[in-house]
Length: 286
Image: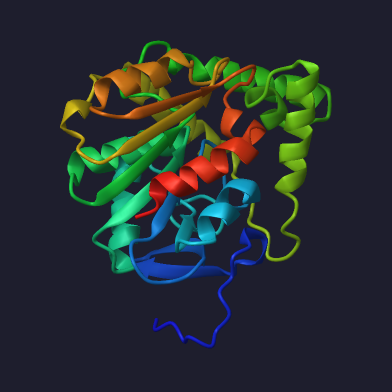
């Protein structure tokens, strides 16, 4: 698709149209925004998430200067096919999607499960990713990562009982600040009013949880081979993917940078979006 210079550049994620591209018999749904040209920033989303789960306060500042692409994995949201049983397969699917769009070099912004998939992608395709942002995530074989299953089911139950969004429990502390940040985050996700994505199915969620559990219980990848500049960020009290795993990633990936936000959980980057978004945008800049 050629980009007509008179076409206005969309810089608001809430307004980005949903597109799709076919790879064999799979159709991948995606949204893109920001100025076209150069290396795109591909966003890798978290467990149970669809296109509607990206915080516009993180996406929009990056899309101010960069071409941003977010996508639904196979079997999630508006993408067709089956949710893969392993994160390695999810990485293969991501590669297939990126190649179908015609890119051989990308930057990556990833959160949680998305960061695990991004690591598997780079292990297989070391030259694909120029700059890497890993948030709320951890390495393959990371200590206690397999416990995410119990924490997730427990918080889904707590959320159901209190009629709240599970992300308020899973991503944020339950103190006054954390509760306020959680409510504000969930509200921001509602800013898009048209062409909303379909929620993930329970079956797909279970498949993803099992894949994360297996990732946590398998032999570590050698991340010392990663050559791209890498920025790692998390809150200091992540119950989902324990904060020590961000420190572990920082040790394993040469010359990586680590930011830990105070008094915040798995969604620390969303709680501190005013501080984090400019840092991320600057890190991804040429």
